Length: 324
Image (cartoon, rainbow, N blue to C red; front, side):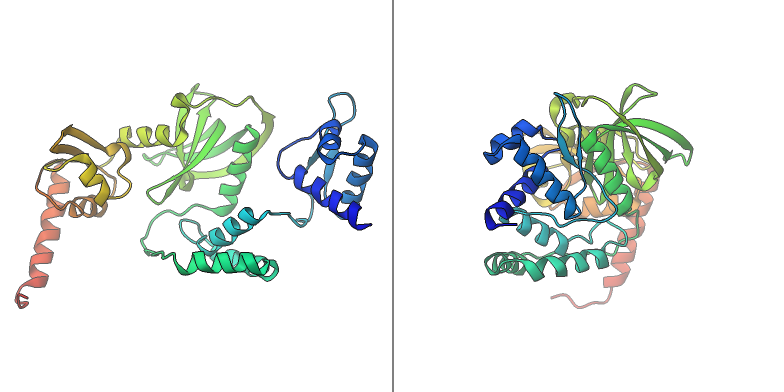
């Protein structure tokens, strides 16, 4: 191919990667060529291994589809930087992805232009992350990828789901968004059987199967998936109740403890209420320990026992140590 043709084919590939389907007329207009030239360039992409589907007729169009092998992708400067930085921090919250992320990063950095490699290095050198080796559920990358595709394509999916009561049921839902919160991943979806919005923890999902049936996008109440998920999480029942009335403004507490979302509510300009309820007793203790001001606590007996045991262990550990 000549240099002009090569540049045009690369531009065509870039367009096909930006949205799900293009009409031949739209592509011809974007590339400033005839529809016949678009067809020839599509054939060139197919010869290079890119799986491009086409539909005939007035409403026909072109789209990239999945093939047996992953062809090269075109990334602009901002996308390349974002992918490189994300790969360097890809281990958090996902099981078994660390080695794959490092391999992908090595391939990407090998071909990054020098100007971009410098920006990625500068970003990484000035970012710090802490990996807490806490026991707990971690999301399966393959499941995350499957759900992400069904959310994008608005494709109904079925899966087995284990409830907090350890009851397994088969669910059918319209996936909407994936949301990460508090070290966990959640699927926000509309349950077709219950005809209502539901929040599913990914670590409780198994045997997820796309059905091939696509539906029109369903608007999320309030038009903000993250806010809707936060409100559902704050209203969800927990195993252990712990509510603190804190002698400090809500903004003061929010600035010192991450991830409170709607669990923090102002009472007046000097006082707020913190709902530290959780299924995990140590997490309640950790949240309350982050408070740097006085508070009163309304909590279940098992929470009180756990906090007292924690205090006693701390007192025993520092007994006899010299004051500084």
